[in-house]
Image (cartoon, rainbow, N blue to C red; front, top):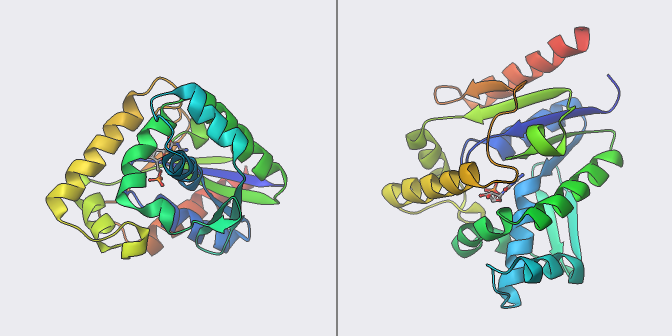
Length: 225
Ligand code: C5P
């Protein structure tokens, strides 16, 4: 299969980044964390005191700032106007405010285009987010929808390193995750929903290696068709 595209969508804390980066490494292709893009625009808007409810102003943020996304082995380095903001986009404030950027159809359209342009320059990608299988790459070779119980996702989030949004009280994390999922599911453009042809994996009782192996197996089966 030439230039493989694998999409991994799912709710907050379902392990998308970890799994997508490992699958990408195993296949020798590029990992794309599209959440980092929404976070970077959020950070820029916050730094520039933009009214987050004003779509026109948000759209200007994308046009008037330089965003650079540099894929690393297991993360994506983010530069905003040549400043490394890889850690700054993971703060609780940016996480909370990203819902405004995610709800903007104009921003989504531009970011989806950036994601497709990015994919076109690579020899294959494993891309993760909320709308990768439904909107950004409807013709992807393999589409995965990762889920896990709210309890398990909250526990995983809590155990992440602090500079990646980890730590905190479990009840608070549950509430935050629940709220983010509700916003992601209920917006009109690019909502969080499995693509019709996505394979849903409930990873509540699976470890990372099992999830990675399951996805690689699905990819291999697809390759044989
Ligand atoms: O995945 P992550 O938590 O980093 O994403 C941050 C936010 O960006 C999500 O809560 C979601 O609202 C938004 N997002 C999105 N579409 C994507 C990726 C992320 O709406 N493809």
